[in-house]
Length: 152
Image (cartoon, rainbow, N blue to C red):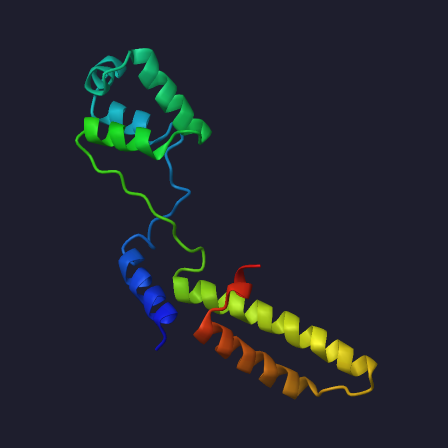
């Protein structure tokens, strides 16, 4: 197994615990405010822990809701609330391997169909069966080698 595939497998292993997380389950008022209120912590109390004003906490909560909060700010809030910030990028396909396989298949289809059209114009058409086989062969090669062209 090549190093790229091995790296993907290792990442999949590390991410497996968060693959079950639904990224769209963010509370409507944001994590900071939701957790702060659930803990019965006032903005003033959190502000004191962060060394800022209650209005500063209010702005943090607003920036989180707007998607403009920084990771550094989230990390500071987590620490002030005696929590850990969990951060990650999770493939929509369920795993890194699935993501690579989908991209590899799409690229293989694009290349083989374009080539087949050119050959048909030159009166050298290839059978549907051969096209499917070529797509499968290319998909396997792209999945194995993970060329940078997958991400163009």
